[in-house]
Image 1 (cartoon, protein in one colour):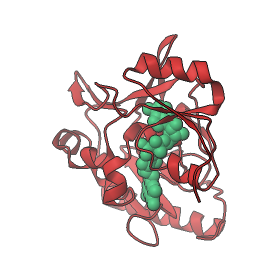
Image 2 (cartoon, rainbow, N blue to C red):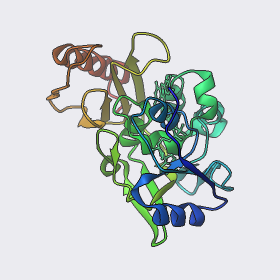
Image 3 (cartoon, protein in one colour):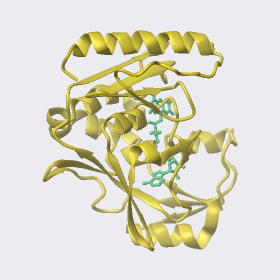
Image 4 (cartoon, rainbow, N blue to C red):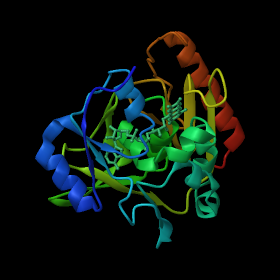
Length: 255
Ligand SMILES: Cc1cc2nc3c(=O)[nH]c(=O)nc-3n(C[C@H](O)[C@H](O)[C@H](O)COP(=O)(O)OP(=O)(O)OC[C@H]3O[C@@H](n4cnc5c(N)ncnc54)[C@H](O)[C@@H]3O)c2cc1C
């Protein structure tokens, strides 16, 4: 199927992107890598009247350590992040998780900002950001807002972004503690049936609810996951318990 007709705007700055969002209202959508938005449009699950292409904004593709924080720009592509030595040495959890995000062709286009803004509950990166206690910086004509990852994901494909806000940067506190990442999927590159990202004593499960679910290592596993074609709710709960046990075993007393 083809996407419904839409207008196309290319912007050069974050300010222009936010202004265009404000001008065109809730029917407008930002276009980053297009790897989630364009399939949704082709399937007629989304029909924005205007696409605002942010792909050529300069300065949002940086990966840098600034004081005790790792800052990743919204337009950093998955494959770039996966191969980045700074991320690998400071936040190896993220490198490991990125190996599980889709396939090379999709990783070559998809962006970190697009992935987080899309807020797919089966996605690896939102859970990692919650486990890592990351802060998401968003920009609008009113200025910059910093949102804890835990508060950023508000529901199924829903975030705390206001209609005229753009995700600009994600910031991860350093140093990161002991970590663990595993997911159970039918095939490599598929979305997870259940997954777990751990940083220290912060366990963030994904694909078990409408958003990442944070639990402390010692807390009871009180999950109530939904069932679908891939797995029943009880099967997901069982698999989440298996991943939790593997994490606790792997990390031993190191969390
Ligand atoms: C076959 C296939 C398999 C995939 N498998 C996985 C997987 O296993 N795990 C996984 O995590 N992902 C998977 N993905 C999704 C992929 O990671 C996408 O790249 C990502 O989810 C969206 O990033 P994008 O840059 O392509 O965003 P786009 O598709 O351009 O945008 C997605 C949404 O985010 C909004 N948006 C984009 N950038 C911003 C911003 N800076 N600020 C505010 N809003 C913004 C857009 O308006 C849109 O609503 C898969 C995709 C495909 C097609």
